[in-house]
Length: 64
Image 1: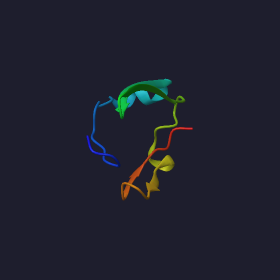
Image 2: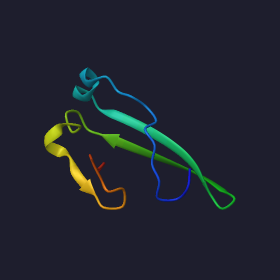
Image 3: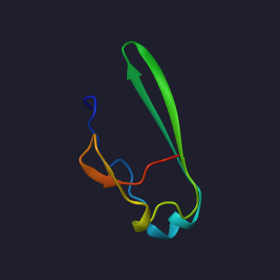
Image 4: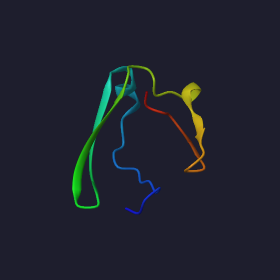
């Protein structure tokens, strides 16, 4: 994917939002492979947590 782009990569059933959710992403930057883990605490993925993500011009939940 190009820099500063996004794609839906995994659909989550809403019942699972009550659990801690962990996503691992691997990507290349130049010739170096990186791994990044994103952890969303239980019940943090919800309508009230949506914020405008300026770079994407879309609403989403920011991982802390």
